[in-house]
Length: 210
Image (cartoon, helix red, strand yellow):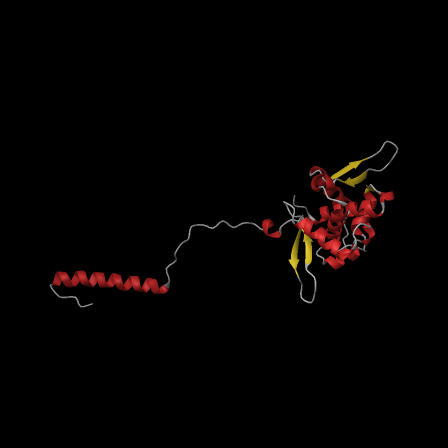
């Protein structure tokens, strides 16, 4: 289920707020927009508008990843994620996925630091073990990208985004056409002249010396 950047930001924000500020979850339209565009714990920092968020929310509802409802005693529609309905993750796995969705490619050390607010991961070994479990699923949710220059740890990335290669237009290859070179054309002309001379010499009773 490939997701656009704004859809990933919404899901990551909903998961984060559910786990770190449960008193304000589910989120209203405005609180969700602020969560997506906040200037801390986000990379890149964005400026999504209400229409941007509304369109992406509808796409996520269509995919069964978000639920939106308004209670009888409330004025605002509120939104909650249904991420776990599809992926069945424990709290540690959910924390790692949320941080990756909100901050992009990261090392286990960075993930350990940035997931402290979730209060579920116990040190670097726990983060690495969780990453390996997510990577070893039948359909891996994360992948190891190796080390960047100057880094001592591998970087990890979630696998939920759109593959840019898949979005590029495909150019159909037509049948291969052999275009003669100037050398080939000259050779053909010489062979044609030889053929004509051979014919002429034969009719004159002369011997043609090639």
